[in-house]
Length: 367
Image (cartoon, rainbow, N blue to C red; front, side, top):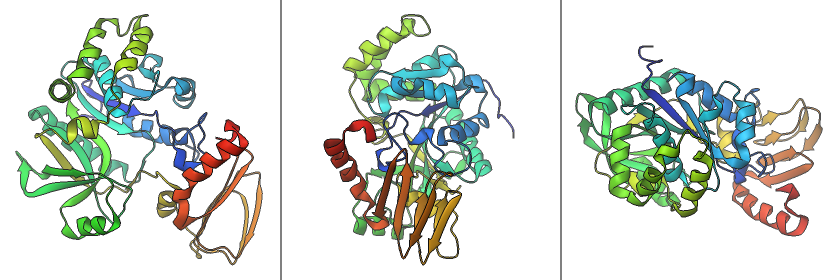
């Protein structure tokens, strides 16, 4: 595909989340992005890195993670340059992590085109995905715009953010890319239904495309406090003083998302309507929706699972464990590192309560 290895194409992979809704598999010491939750033999981070390699050279891929997970990234991604693994001392949401990575990229290429994406999403149709990214790169190269990918809303999901676009306003020379009208965070069910019915709302995939100069201008306008902090230490990046600078910078940087800090405020934001088999697989239920199922609607990861009269269940157990279940409908059953969790699929929001109670009563060794 044309332009796949151009040196000015860069990618930032955000890999610092803790994935608490995937407990008990996702733990503080090894969160979701470092797990093979799909049973494919690849962690979610490894799958994301493979997609990034289709966009740009390996040396242009940056991974931003917590300093707790730097070694996990190195283990999962032996191809990734160690200096491209950026470790945050504390979590400050997505805007500071993007600003940090963009500052590193700017030292190498001031006219860079940059893709930003989370480390833990599922994308089925990789070729379609790559086509959409290069469509965005072409626009970002021509115009000072900020671009996000929006997914056709298949049903009224209340766990996703939504993007409303102007039906009749397209980017110059490319009528497939729409001008963004409004961002809406996770809506109530009735509102989500109206979004889906309207036809001009998309799920916000949290995937962004822009030129370095466009996002630099946006930070200067909308988040000058972050710009000021990063600029002070720009000359210390790629030196042995970088770690100390980042520690200081993150101690004073505000915690704010790129969506709220910039995308919802800027007037030069466009969206590429996309349909490439995307899921953020942020919950067990979301994972169930994208997994293969047997004739009874059960999705199973595990070599020794025996089910009797079970329907619509998601089961994930280690391959050396024998699990026998009978008479269950619409349950999640997960075993990981000595913890077994059973939960009704329709009540999985209670997992957060489970983890809180476990930490209080049993200690953080299980969290």
